Image (cartoon, rainbow, N blue to C red):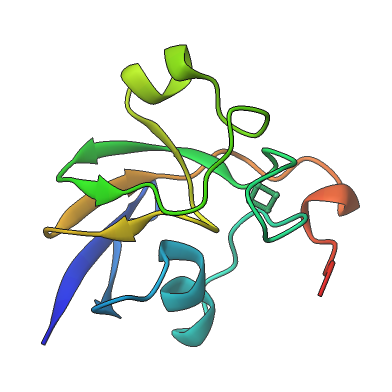
Length: 102
Ligand code: FES
């Protein structure tokens, strides 16, 4: 069992297993999303949830402010789907977005 995630503006759909973050599921299915620390602190992976609900997991107020959260933004490295989702990634503008901090 898992949740369907549709990635906009690409209109690509993939499945996240229960307990998987959006970033983990996207990476597993070969989709590249902005990525920095992978730990909820830098905000590089920030994106919008257009439909559906998530568990914000280990998101920190440093990586995602309360105002951003209220506006429907999430940290893809932390957020775990709790329903099917439609999400919107932001454009990747530099190599900073692709750093692998693991
Ligand atoms: S990659 Fe740093 S907060 Fe998600």
